[in-house]
Length: 240
Image (cartoon, rainbow, N blue to C red; front, side):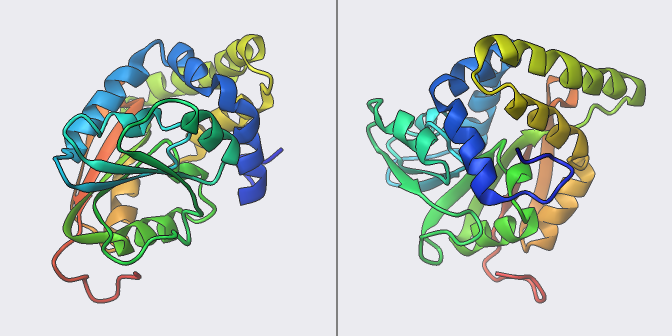
């Protein structure tokens, strides 16, 4: 089992999510106390998909997040490296959603293919998050949008310590009752605790070449929605 403090091996992480696929959405709903629905609404509003636009949802899993971008008539791609997750998603009716297997560090799309790109709760699972952000920049058209929804850290140190204790104890306990792979939720708690705070994530997004970078805390900072744009020209020194 991959542990958060070790280098993330894509094959092991994908296998972990394959095992969770059938109950993944239920577990998210239970463990977030239903907040995941609110988070998806905020992400969809930030993406702002409109008719005819092409939207890439990376680390889309079963495509639950991707479906939130379709009501306005956008064409959406749900991309993930877990075939188990994609298989579950593809069994559900999903007009305007194409399910595509892909590596976040070498996306199977051409340059400037999408009007907006988004990744929810997947950036911290990448073996190289900075390379993933640069790859997302590559496939985004000039002027296009990036929306990253990821776990954050509470701005109050004492409360954040209590929150991390909850993650370490309560999350695996609940997962043991509802999941066939409770060890995956040990990984979840560790990966959240080891992920940088919101200002550092914003710095890394800028370092990948994105502009107009900002973020919004949700649920007191348990989750943050980071937004950015691809400039008409990529800044000198940025990797694309």
